Amino acid sequence: MLIILNGNAREIEISHLRNILLRGGSQFKEVNFMGENIFLLFNGTPHIAREEIMKTGIVKKILDIKHPFKLSSREFKSETSVILVGSVAIGGSEPVIMSGPCSVESEKQIWEIAAEVASKGAHILRGGIYKPRTSPYSFQGLGVEAAKWIGSAGKYFNLPVVSEVMEINDIETLYSYVDIFQVGARNMQNFKLLKELGRTNKPILLKRGNSATLNEFLMSAEYILSEGNGDVILCERGIRTFVEYTRNTLDLNIIPAVKGVSHLPIIIDASHATGRCDLVNPVTLAGLTAGADGFIVEVHPRPAEAFSDGEQSLDFNQFGQLIEDWKLIREPVLALRNKQSAKRIKVA
Ligand code: PEP
Ligand code: MN
Image (cartoon, rainbow, N blue to C red; front, top):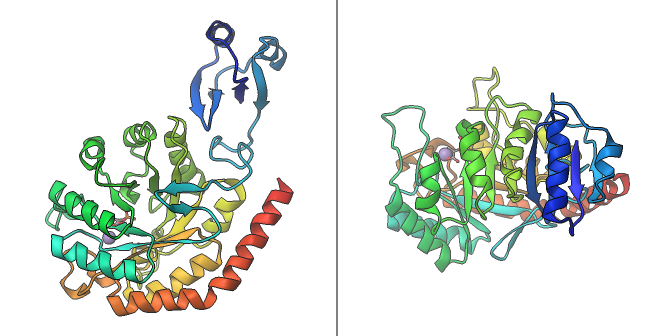
């Protein structure tokens, strides 16, 4: 149950409501979200009678949301959230293009890639600074030096930067160089990290864990939202299946499924989903056709020499081809997006 307060509720009245809930044995969290003061009552604790809550005179509305996720649900907010990063809108009418290397390897490398992807129309520059690697003996990222390089390349080419934070300390280190904090698949349920990111004022790119269900994915988003930060961009990056010919399997289903129940934008990452550069382009286009709000791809000038994820990185020609192919289907895909979002608004 969500209790949304009137904007003019006074502290003394709020404290009265708090006491009613506590006396009744309810546990709850007080959240300031999208301009609203909300009491979120916890599952499993007694819910107080609506009449008693309404009697306080400070309640705008009470929402009983059927999903386990609340603030990210369309029942809470029916229109898709549009997240602004500089002049880039994520979740609006135009799908967003994020690209760059798996890892920032040198100043020269990131500037070369930034120049290329900017000239081809990318909106956001990606690049790993801290790398979560399966093996402790694989390249682990260059840390704060790399942050400075990607930060200045991004500024120069007017591309906001997205990069992964692996632990709470990384937030402060990267804060002035990075515009979107990425949470990697391996950290999707690092709840302490998610809560800390929820207290920042930067957008979060939340990747789906490789065996996470839709509910688990959105509950992780909820950890960020319930700390006050509503700017969460979901990312489907493939799940673990029995197939052996790709690194993961892109779960295309989750795109329309998320769109049906949540207002958060969702993008796709066919690089990590396939692990194969020859499959990245068709799978990316499939994701856009299914309604994704954008895509993220790994790009490297010489993939064979990449420090990480070379097999799945597009070279400059392949990236150019992807952008050309996207332009071929862009108009009908945009028409489809408009039609589907109009239908959603009507249903809501
Ligand atoms: C990455 O983006 O380079 C990465 C490690 O992604 P994921 O967390 O999806 O594996
Ligand atoms: Mn990678």
